[in-house]
Length: 305
Figure 1 (cartoon, helix red, strand yellow):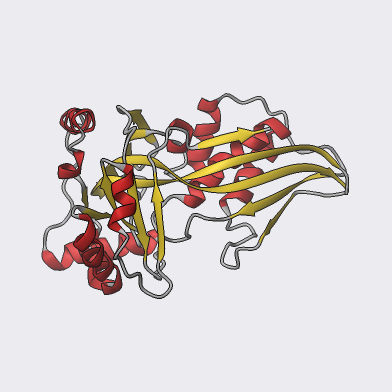
Figure 2 (cartoon, one colour):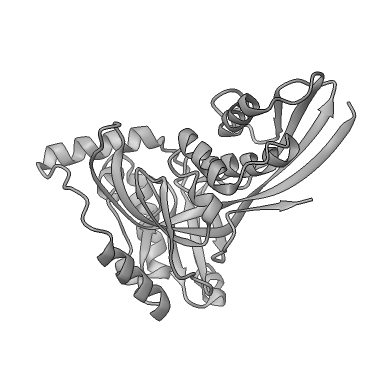
């Protein structure tokens, strides 16, 4: 098949440095307040507009990546194709080189979705601005709009509202993903059940001004690790003790350790990037455990030609 136009996109992961979950919204989603951080752990996605093809075809060597309608790349294509389909006899080939672990709370699917919207906006000549692309992304997944903003951001609502904070522009993150995958919907059900058993319920979300100021100051002074928190940890650890064990093992070499999103990834921050590497010199990973050291990054997605 002949290629008419090609675009390669870098699609980066995120970490939740802070995550509070509040009551259920009228639309059925939980209200959250979170601090998201882009990191350099990334997937590479290549898109080609080709003659002799129809719709979108995903190719990947990653055995666990779905390639049908469940994939957010496909959902993104379907949204843009309703605005402007490829000409008759032309379609999209999408080749995914996957490095971001699936089901780990690192936002790989949402990042891939944002990257797809950016790439296909060019390939299909839909000529939508980032605000419109972000709104389309929010219809697909709550975390998608963040990847258009990137950097260090305050994320709230159901996850679709994003405010830029001062960037974390130094140091490095040690990330460990034990061999456990957690579906986000399942994680919220576990959290609901856990709170019901404890009788704590869900409180209403407080005003954002205090959180915004606290984290802005913490980032500027580089002592934000003291504010790191994740409401999911207790409920997830109860159901998946392997993740709690991974956190305890990483704490022995890293100090402040937190789970990202609804898990299963855990991470630690080091103000000096070299110290992140030194921390793992004597670390013994479990069989099947994924380890990565990533710098904080600004751009969630980047186009390359």
